[in-house]
Image (cartoon, rainbow, N blue to C red; front, side, top):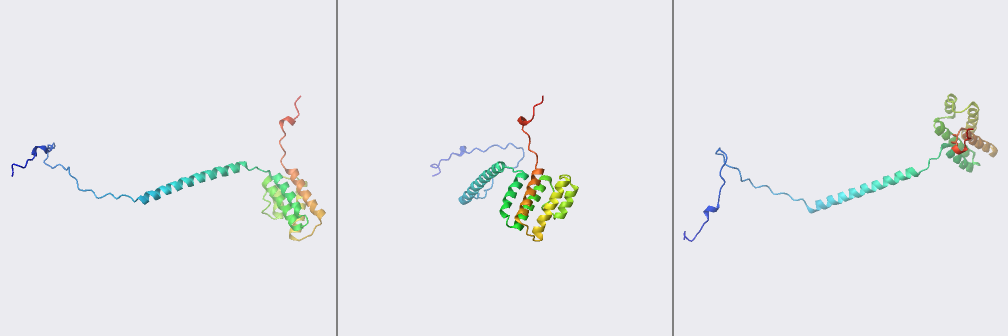
Length: 197
């Protein structure tokens, strides 16, 4: 029976120990614990989140570019032109003295603040005129006309005076003329300049 069993005992070759010490060679390691494989749903949700972030970033980028384009296209209207347009619209209230005087007075105050950096809208007439007295942006005649204009508007706004239409139109004309006197001079084109002899 022992003769019928053949073995190949010479096939197992062990490497020779190269170290001089008698320490055994540690070539066999313990069994590693199983590796946990993430769920397929986790990868799907991560993919969806990445796509959503990319789409959101793209939409935000498009929106910000569109907003910048709109800002660039918006025309800048100078304060004197805007004030004249508001004064023209104020004529719609010529038969309502309180509303008319409020619109005309507010328009002129806002114009003076934008044009000369005077703090007109947020001050009382007395405070504004006191600040204007120390300023050199208007001459004495313009300051006097402005004081008369503001006092007449205050009589309508706070004392409920009822001026007639001709008086209201005179207030409107005074506001328009003050804006026209103080608006910046337009640059003269080079073609219009007289040539030197």
